[in-house]
Image (cartoon, rainbow, N blue to C red):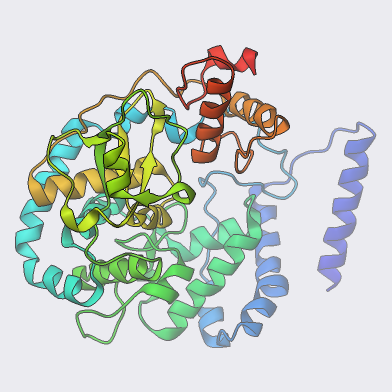
Length: 416
């Protein structure tokens, strides 16, 4: 208690000195380590105790926890804030390289071999959960290279560091306590709980909160082991997708050609219509194949992730379930494309990605605010061109005598 009061006084003095312009030396990492230990005892333990974590688990695990100074987005107490960097529009900064053909081809070849190796397990999982094996293999490939990617960090160390001194302390504090719940339950030992620099665990890259909700013991050994058990990892991913609304028997979507006469400003899950209705408008698969008969009466949505500058799609609700795993159109398209390659031996999307993604997020944000001021629903004003922003831009272009492209570019910034 006395030490905490002293630290508070020191912080107040440092703040005063900074305000009046007196140079103050930054604290050392050793000093921050000491504050971390105080935080574990004074702040984290009461929350963990309230959440039902046993003292034995807490003391054993947190007594060995160490700060990981190499993590991104850290804000150590007493250190100057990191300089803000210009942000590009993250999701579409480079859509072409995201679908690197050599990489996808290699992953598809490995995926087909693994589909044969784990055919029995995948069939059992699909029977129980309704999620096709190629979809699970594609997620496994994207997340950890079919389990080959190294997980270099102690998950506890990463989560503790982020809970103590990241820019999202509350989120990571909850995840750290959930990790302690996992250890308390005995599914994994602390030294084997390895993860990424974001604290995501094992082969499916679940955050601890997702592990507690969705991880399953599919190999019957009494442990939910998403680190070394392939059946547990694949079944846990399937359980996650089902919980998020995966529809048994439906595809994820189809690459299509949308005629110029049809506005690109009709995308989004809230503008769904039967697949037969889209087909009647003249939208067709790029492969030339007819749409599956069992899909024709089902709800389907237009998707133009790069507007008229890239591939165009009709997608099912399962596409949006894939986005629950990683909230990115490109991620879900990567999974869908790789799954099709594994299942059918297909290849790259037919249409190429145009010259898009060079605007700063701040510029896109300005455009969003301009559209919102004109009465358009752009969704969240965050500098990312989601479907509401894209279709609002397309509507605005049409009303102002421009050919709708449904994607922000430099030429539109000044006009808006």
